[in-house]
Structure formats: structure tokens, C-alpha cells
Image (cartoon, rainbow, N blue to C red; front, side, top):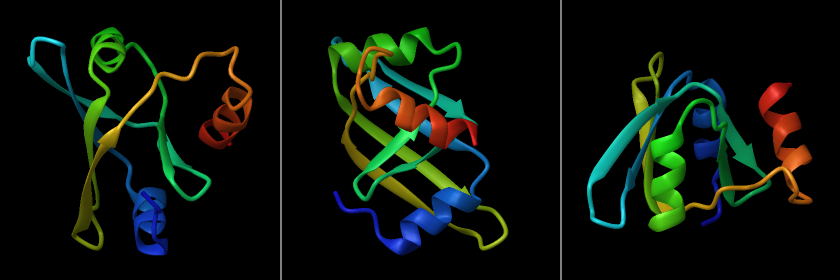
Length: 102
């Protein structure tokens, strides 16, 4: 999915998002995330900070939903798609890490 300028702007001004995952047994899990952004024009990146259930679920079932809201504008988005866990050995990891830590 191509991220529009409106979605990117909302991601940049939102301070919290909710990442919904589901296990292989279809048990849902929603976890709030504070460190997130977009990567290039088609990916949302979320830091893995003490989220073992989220990681397990993504490895079992890649379907996710992410929601975020700019509270000052009272507008947000709910986006559905697939996720993957990016390991430190990935060539993209350091680029994504720089975005999340800058």
C-alpha cells in the first residue's frame, strides 16, 4: 500500500499507535506502541520494545491492523496489511533504526 502524504503527516504527529495481531489460533492481541514511523512510501515501522507476544503472533500470522490518531486534529487512520519482523541482520534494519531513533 502506498502511504499518502496525509497518512505520513498523521503518523508524524501521532504519539501513540495500537498494533493488533492474532496468533495462529486466532487469539487477538492489541498492543500500544510509542515508537513508530513510516519507511519509504509503503511501509510503517514499529519498534520492538518488550513485545514478545506481538513478535510471536507476527511470526505465526502476518495479518495485522494498526491504528493511530492525531489528537489535535481529531483524525486518525486504521490500516490493515501484513507485517514481518525485521532482524538485525537485515540490510534494511539500520536504515529503519535510524528513522526510529532520530
